[in-house]
Length: 237
Image (cartoon, rainbow, N blue to C red; front, top):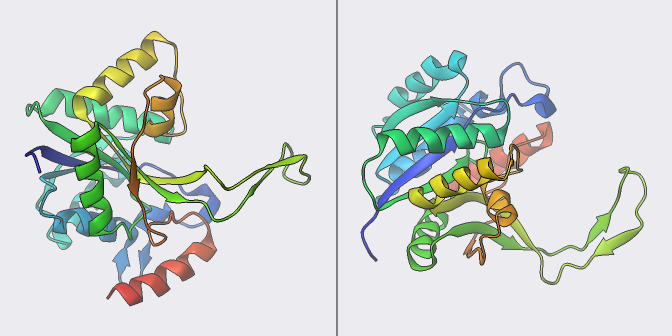
């Protein structure tokens, strides 16, 4: 595998409104450890990850640094201020890396902090696929068909499962490519996108290459997800 400088950009700026919790879900302590710290440990432990940056709101910066110190996360290189949306937070992180990272061969793995069970294999596959093909989007085959709906109550059609993949994170691109994507988005007046990979699609970047994901790499969103996280975390240990 060719050498590259690999950075994990962890998006931890969400407010967690759907969780209805006192603190954002990435900072929740579950069975003695915060969700964020579990996520950080996954990237800390991977031998091909050289640096970690976390995007969060200013009031949580001290907490993030404390968690990193508590967990021995010595790859943490910086904390970036979050934006008003996940997309803005990703843009802030990419722009910051463009200013501070000097290595021309840098690859960035953009990952949701609330996917704490990301596996070492997923990280490895993202780096390998990106090095080989120029990008990597963590994805899983879909095992269900999807209903189309406009109001959440009725459906007027469906999308068959064949040909569909469920996107997860990381979304992995060379830093130079991400920098160019943000420039093109600004030129085209794109101010919001669901994610970095959907932005790539809007900009016509094709093909996007799949790095196989894992069912364990799910996003903690609702209260019920905590039960799955606890069960899977126990199995992991």
